[in-house]
Length: 210
Image (cartoon, rainbow, N blue to C red; front, side, top):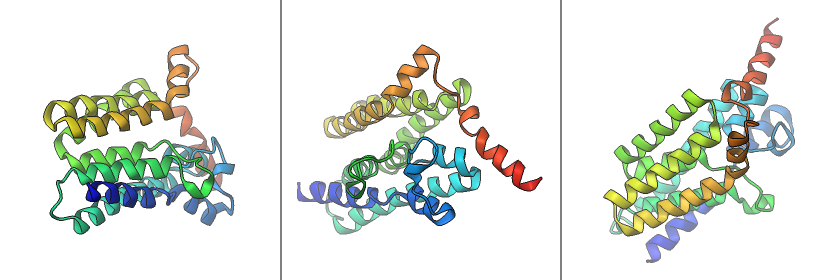
């Protein structure tokens, strides 16, 4: 039990490190919360600063999830590997509700995707790939994000047991909560497609090169 609790806390600590805010401050001198949508995630940074900056944010978010899981695994080698899922939940909570920024954070898509893949590589990959395909064919980021967590919840209950299924369900509820407004905009026809979200970054780069 202590391994599970401490892994959750380790993940929360790593999650509080917002890659997007560090990168935006280095590049612009502003907080990521002051640019674009204010969301400290890859999509907002890509939209405002271009693809390379967005890729750096994605890499950092994936890396912090891996480090949280690795540290938990090294500290609690004798524990069940489900501690990786506890670390993922903690990282997601810390990323979405960072203490240092008054609990205003990101949406946790990258950290959730990485974490479920670390815990169960094949089911995680299936869920992640399905969500990516949904985004590719529909253009809606919120829809793809929720598809990932919802499909993984089904797979976790089916193949990993009750505890993993409950943790996956919590991740799914968090993902749905963070994307609820986006989902309502999708079904009302008001949500922007991903090509529109990233267009500003492309325009900025073309202006700089001209």
